[in-house]
Amino acid sequence: MRVLIIDCEGTALDLALRTRTAGHQVRWWVRPRRDGQRRCCGDGIIERIGDFVEVQRKWLDWADLVIETDNVAYTEMLDQYRARGYPIFGPSHEAAQLEIDRASGQRALRAAGIPILPAQEFHDYDAALDYVRAHVKKGRGFVSKPSGNSRVSEDKSNSYVSDDAGDMQYMLQRWKENPKYRASARDGGFILQDKVSGCEMAVGGWYVHPTGWVGPWCENWEYKKLMDGDLGVNVGEQGTLARYVERSKLAKLWLEPLTPLLKRLQYTGYVDVNGAVQACCGGKTWPFELTVRLGWPITHNQVALHQGDPVQWMKDGLEGRDTLNAQINLCSVSVVISIPDYPYGRFTQKEVCGIPIYGGIDRDRHHLCEVQLAEQVPTQVGDRLTHIPGLVSAGDYIAVAVGVGSTITAARQSAYAAVRALRMPNNPQYRLDIGRARLVDQLKDLQDHGFATGLSY
Image (spheres, rainbow, N blue to C red):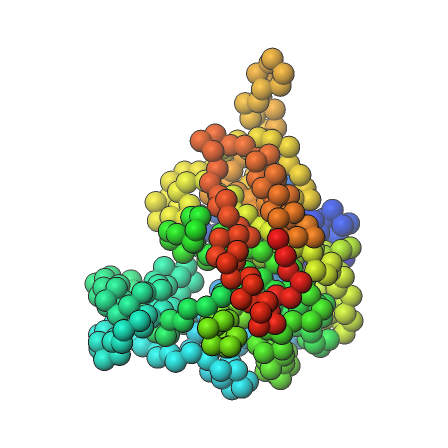
């Protein structure tokens, strides 16, 4: 099969390599960085497309399967081809708005009969400041989330979870003074949600038009902060615990009600709803947001649990057949391995290419990301120093280590053994508590209310 991967952020090197190993022909387009510079990931490792004009002129017609890695670019262009029957695995532009335009996503959840948190959409910070001042209440916090298709919403820089009205007001005032954020608010808007305490959990599934839901449900727990203990800056996803299950109480509440909408949109790809279960309120559930695209690094968790060909099931789903074979009830733990200035590299523009990666690469557990091949890497072999071809960094998001096991502890041990096997000058950075942290205390509460059944340490 001929597979074209259209990659928005340079995240799909591992998927491209595994697809090639399975015997398929692969071509990979990677969108340039925001400053217009070409990304180096995959150089010397896999064949890349150098000019996007060639994607439209040649490679879309060449491909038996087209895979979109994200929903922040190219959706409108690909919709023209999707309408003509091209085999595209990924969200349409309309479907992407369920995530990018958060207010639209909240309306979709409510229309499906799913209870949502009180929220208000804003397009200027003065109105939001007035709203917070008018809704001060002891014990009440707020969550700010960008909305709309803008650079700020794409990198989620102005997402924030406040403890009370005071720190929310401070952050809104700070953003108000930033011209970039004011422009983003005018163009795309942002929402303020009520903050709720509870056990955070997500569930996802693969909906592939025209087949419908394929494979089992994917229950997962994201670790969004940079540092252990859920401290530090929100990076989106620093690691994930995931497992496939045949039956999921959360899927019945959050995913199955979305089926008519996904069918109408002729959606194709991964759908995930993240939210909270309130043990203090009898297990009441609140969805926070929709993800309608491949997730990173959870895609690596899922690939590790899939059996057989990594992409043939996508093509089959587009043709009306459910052939996704996933291991059920096994735990998968992913750990993001990065180097400074991550997660601020897009601002500092520090040169991070060419840093050697030492240690044996385990293709089962090391999922390569911003990596390239260099011809002359200083390497010690026994008592001798030499220069040989080897892997080096092509950015600050180096790899994702993934471990699989029958329990959370077994999956963690496998993942962190893979992390320790990878060495770089100045040491890479990663969290030590993926699969633990808050979940240690919350798992019993979840299971007492019928969620995460069978999951154990």
